[in-house]
Length: 283
Image 1 (tube, rainbow, N blue to C red):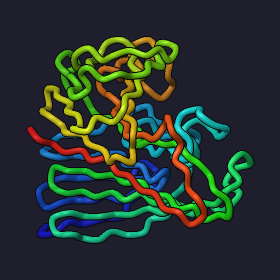
Image 2 (cartoon, rainbow, N blue to C red):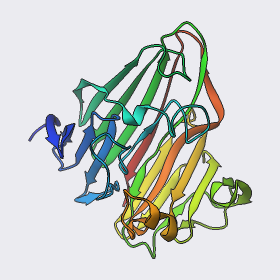
Image 3 (cartoon, rainbow, N blue to C red):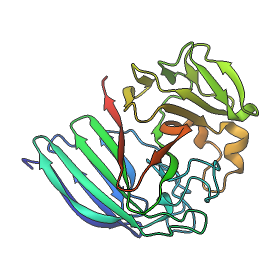
Image 4 (cartoon, rainbow, N blue to C red):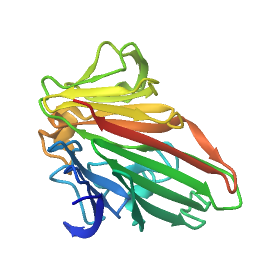
C-alpha cells in the first residue's frame, strides 16, 4: 500500500469505514453516531471499546469516541448526552491529503429535531488519520430560523495498559468540579491516576495533556472552542453496575473529553461552529 485507503465494511453488524495508512495505522469509524471505534498505531490499540458494548442501536456504544451533541450529560431537556450518538450519520467519503486520510460524516437534522429542541441543524464529524495522529472534529450549522444554544463533548475513551502506573499529566494545580462528589470544587493534586471514581470538569489546559502508561505516551490536545476538559473513570463499584462494561474495565480505560459545558454555545440562523480534539502517540 503506497497511500492511505478508506474501505467500507460491515463490522459486527455496523456499517463502518476502515482507514488504513501505509505505516500500518488503522482507524475504524461507525456510521452509527459517526463514532470512532478503534485507532491502532505503532501496533497498539489506543482507544477502549467495551467487550459488552451494545451495537444494535438499543443504547449508545460504550467506547471509542462518542459524539455528545447537542447536549452534554443531562444538562438540558434532551436524552442524556443528546441525540447524535444514537443517530445514523451519512457517510460523505474520504480524501487523501498527503500522508493522511480525511473522512467525513454528515447529520442533517430537520426542525423540529426533538419535541424539546425545535430547531434545525447540520452537523459534520471529520476524522483525520495521519501517522501516529488521530484528529476528530465536530462542526455544527444552525439551519433553522431561530437561535439555539448547545453543549457537547467528544467523549473519548482512551485505552489504558498498566493501570498501576498509568497517569494523566498536565492538570496539576488546576481547579475542577467533581461530579462524583456532588459537584464539589477542588484543586488537582498531582497527576490523575486510576483508583476511586473520577468525574471531573476542568478548564481546558492550554498546553495539552499527556497520558503515560505501559504502552507509552499519548499527547492529547483540543481546540480553544472546547473550553472544558472532562476526565472520567467509573471506579470499581460503578463499573461493576454498568451493564455494558465488564467488572474490571475501569482498569483498562480513562475518558479524556474535549467539551463545551459551562457556557452553552449560541448559534444564530446560518451561523457555523467547529472544534477538534487531537491524539498523538509520542513515545
